[in-house]
Image (cartoon, rainbow, N blue to C red; front, side, top):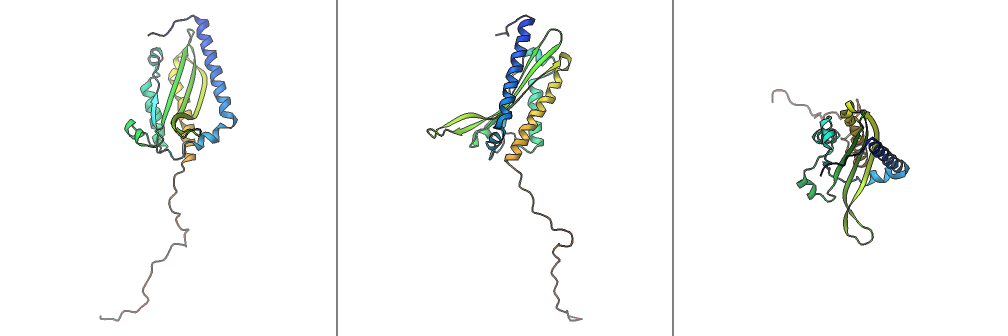
Length: 201
């Protein structure tokens, strides 16, 4: 089914709604959820990346699903976070996946409103009955506006959100540091045999 068509007023209304939703998400993240969200990332072996389909007009403007998929996976790998295949994900206890949704509303005069939502889903154990369910345990979002000719620049804001996830993931799963190297002068000297060796033998 095609996307419903509306006038300029409806487009602007959608943009305002996107903005309000983004403000609510940001406010929720600002009030004490950060530490709890970081805690839920402990012990994860990696994540699978899923990017939601983009609207055709957004793809035509230069912001494609494939480019976003590549961006997210590249940033994760640069941070040392393992990108899981579906088969690998199903073999882990938490079965986590990182989901990206980028919504863009293009206005006729050329301005665009965007909303970026990034969240982590994983298997959790319900305290009430001990059963396993899937839940969102980490999320972040951002809203803003760009010119129509600047739609590809939204990827810069996506990168910021992915870097935020990477920072929280690494904070929850610190890399084990290598064994400390002794200070200069403290290096162990090679053992020598002080016994004299008879000459000619």
